[in-house]
Length: 255
Image (cartoon, rainbow, N blue to C red; front, top):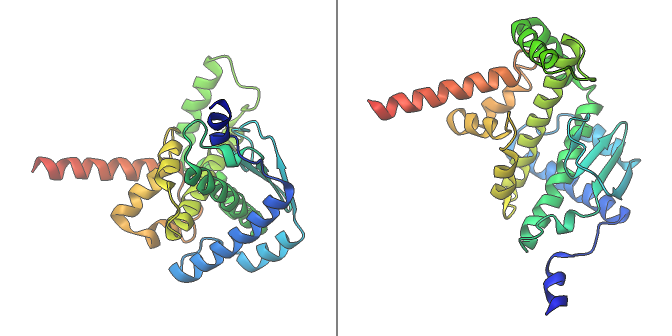
């Protein structure tokens, strides 16, 4: 009985070869989804495919590198073409015993890092223009936040407006990357995707802000935020737009 219990959740760990296969399969899934939905999920797709053909793919133990550039709990992209995934992804459902969840989480992690790679191939335009936008449009919010950080004893990493604007821009790019990944896996009807999505919503700026906006305004509008409106929109506008929608909903219930 003891062996059966452990056998449920301790599955085979990922190998470097598995990661290579996951990247290849995920690129195919993204290509098909992009063609089918006609949305700019990866605007630099042909160049990214070419770049990742020469890529470096590794399975390793990743200790949730939160806050680092281009990282998610189970994966990491390192420029120019390295993708690392956590060896333990096949057991990421532990202790629930939901193999479907682990499979979806594994594909989701690969798709997420590939989309970061595509951003890099495109010169990190969303990141760069968002930093400029935050510095230009939100100095008041930067000032207040920096004041709070300093009052709480400071933060070795955040020393000035530029550092803070960069952090917020990285968080926004990650939120956008989560949303793009979600759109791909939703299109392929991946099982247990909503479980993953609801876990991500614990963050202060949850990626599901974008799915809430999508419900009201459609996916073309949301993708327009990181293409046509690139450099005019960030976490702060997303939060404001979401709050306005919720207020309008509340008013319509009261009428």
